[in-house]
Image (cartoon, rainbow, N blue to C red; front, side):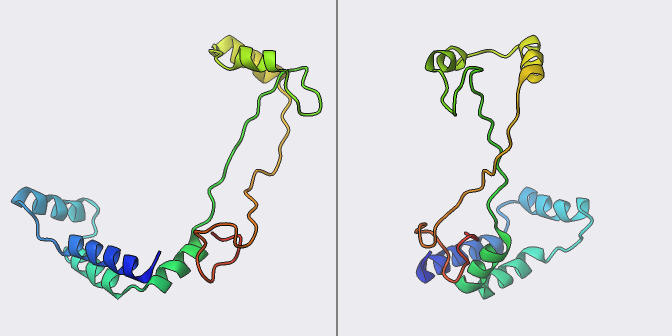
Length: 141
């Protein structure tokens, strides 16, 4: 993200926050949201717009590096019973590719399944991602 792109996005967001309501119903909706959340902060949009205008690209990059992490992932690999050394028999794989799981077949699978846990985190080499944030540690993007 370039500084010019960030400035454009920042200005658009601030403009949207400072936008006057288009109808009385819209204004009522904004105010009712404050009442229903019990925040009663009717100047929130104006204050948020001021805070957005004060942000710099480096602030966004620092926030992303410190607070945004890769989501937790779970991968389930189902292989045929006659799989040898990680190779699945193709006929068995194709036969089950479009299988409808009934409650009975799910119960049978759960009883006979053997679960193997492995680390599924994404390993990235430094500089491999073109979207890496400047100054971010290699594993933080």
